[in-house]
Length: 299
Image 1: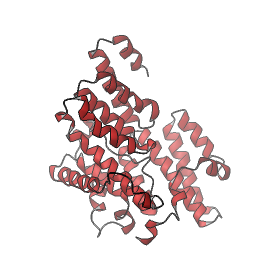
Image 2: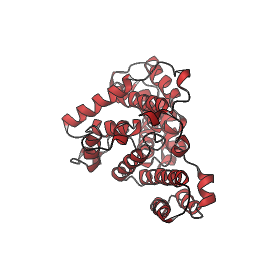
Image 3: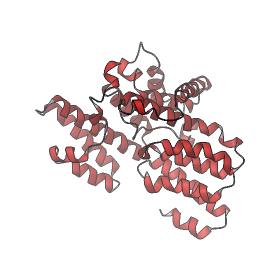
């Protein structure tokens, strides 16, 4: 745990496009394919980039940074491809190499699709269960806030009641560690920062259970305050849940604005963006704004 309390590898946990593009010519090609929404092609190029590092002569920390950054973009591509299983496995792999992996691209299950509802046990559920079993998991994963959060989130939407109960309990344990205000003494402690980010997202994920009980606009205030503390790249799921919560309290305009933030600002979260669009279209039709709803059908 001693190494986790330092900033030694902080630079490894962030996406560094300028650094990579200067050392890997085809990184820009991968980004171009991603920009064209050719996600499978982008994923393959990122994978080729990562594989090629084995045969390159470079300082170990530079190689490690490149490997992590390419891996993060693989997760992003898989998420855009709606391959949640493989995205989760890749993220767990990143956490094994870097326990303090950024949560910016963590593939959390913010909503339960029909596919998940109708499916049996998924491989990622087995991996998630193993995160909480020290006998089956490398220590680096069991110490990783990102891996713990993802494992808890996956189990919380399991079709198996016992697994679902375990996942929700793990989310509650994470959320309980959230401090009312960030501790200024810990501003240079990367482990503390990752733990607080994980606790924030866990607290917001647990809001799914509270939404049916909301009644007024004032009931949204605690969720909005939590959302403002979440780093901008990690807010996609929070905006989606805020949209659901606003609809529950009769705040149609706010729900529409919150949902639309997802496809506009977090497009690569394609399953979540598509679900947010569906909710927006349904709400617009309910309000009789059919012309706006029709325009969004081709978004």
